[in-house]
Amino acid sequence: MAVLFEHEGVFIHSNEDGEEPDLLVSGFLRLIDKDGETIVEYKPLEDTVDPSNMLCAGALNHTHEKSKWAFTFSVWDLRSITVKEEGSSRLMFRLKEPPTSLPVLHFHQGGSEDFLDCLRRYALITEAPDDETCLLVSTPNRALSQSFENLLDDNNYGLVTKLKNDPYVTTLGGFSKVTNYIFDAFRGPELEQQQRPPEEMADLDILGLGEVIPGLEINQQEEPGFEVITRIDLGARPEVTRRQPLSAEDWAEHQEKGGRMKNVPHLKKIIFKGGLCHAVRKEAWKFLLGYYPWDSTYEERKGLQRRKTDEYFRMKLQWKSVSEEQERKNSRLRDFRSLIEKDVNRTDRTNRFYEGIDNPGLVLLHDILMTYCMYDFDLGYVQGMSDLLSPILYVMENEVDAFWCFVSFMDHMHQNFEEQMQGMKTQLIQLSTLLRLLDLAFWNYLESQDSGYMYFCFRWLLIRFKRELSYPDVLRMWEVMWTGLPCQNFHLLVCCAILDSEKRKIMEENFGFNEILKHINELSMKLDIEEILHKSEAICMQIRSCKDLPHSIIEILGFNTESELPRLEGREFGTLDSPQSPRPTQRQEVFSNGHNGHYREPLQNGCKVTFIS
Image (cartoon, rainbow, N blue to C red; front, side, top):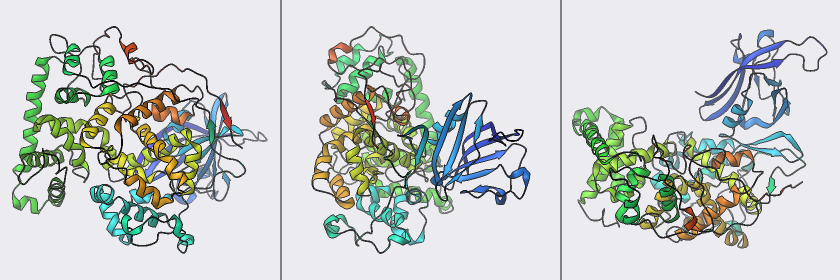
């Protein structure tokens, strides 16, 4: 069990109606992750509550007076939250089945917004069109979480084991197999006999789906009587321009005599707008990934490399010196080695750097991944991580530099590979939220085809489009995203841009769930990276120009995060020239899915907000 949020000094007024003298009950509110399920819990401070006396999904037990105010429920069972701001903040939770209102919580000392911000990471929260004080709560079906978390179910052993330990096979090599499991996981008793009509089914032989998959109801029912989606007129999508990759000469111009990088915000904008020429990547990636501090000198970087080299080989020696007898008694290390050896032999073997038998690049790939297991033994190795290392090693051509750059990349990708896969679930929800804002009609179509939670984008998110783009395009995409521009979670807008280009075909040809999955899977190696980056940036500017964005969108894209980074201009790249900025005093590297270093562009062009009833 993990505590996600905790706040003391949350009160219940025993007599809300005011008919009797009011008694204040002080307690603490928690948000808990328990076996992959998000739980809301309230307990009076002086009370240690027996679970049998707690309010569970709507039934309050008054057996003991002291514990009658305690309650707990799953976020999956939450229908709405009413927010009142009269003096202090008040929250009232309303559950789904049976319809139940819990005691009103009073935040006399603040904390309600912090609680809602934390809750937004685990549920989709939208404002009710007819009541601005009511927040509607929507979560992926319980089976979605189980499809990522409870992956040891014997009934689903084949895909379950692979999705947990072998995303390489399930999502990278046999993408359609994920669909099988997700449908099986979602299928309830009442749906077991249902089947999709033949015209909605993809070619099952091509997909590798061995049986007809039943229909699926993903979303929980919302409040009846109105459409819960807020429709926002985002206005016209602006034109954007891109430029040629940053040259070695341009890079050198941004270095001071002692080696410190200067005018870093402007340099990042140039990289975002055009990427890097390959000759610069070996050095520039170390800065973008955070291995080198932007304000370090040549001498400081040499010292850093010496220290990191010693540290790397000490860790490498740890697994190199393990005897066969020791390894026989260490099942985790043995499993890590087995998975790594299997992956290394099938990673990017068509690339000259890794092709052929006994290729030294493969040896380095193996050794770096084994050493990473020593660096982070809790995570160790999960299949698919080799896809993230391969381009880095290809660029660095150095074992130690590649390792530390990979460590920095994994710091930001770690949650994608954790057993609970919370990072993947969060990104799927965020992507669905963004698409619903950008194109409600398309989102509704996907929803009608059981695709509203974007499972077909799983591989895109897991390894950042590594299997969707050609090798040179992967290098370009990654370095652009590593600038942290033009917003937080830019990779989600890349997904939206790709889907925007494909929506017409998907909708006109009336693709069902399997056809959508098949079509998206077949886009691999057919995508135009410049078109995607153009459209992704334009979408960001279009959203940013709106004054009345939902809070969830602001949070996802980090528009509420202030930064010293100057804004991108959409019309003329030449207008980006700016005076030299002060040298940063600490690490300022930013990533597309990070939470620091992002800037906010001043809001422009007011947007009209309308509600659909």
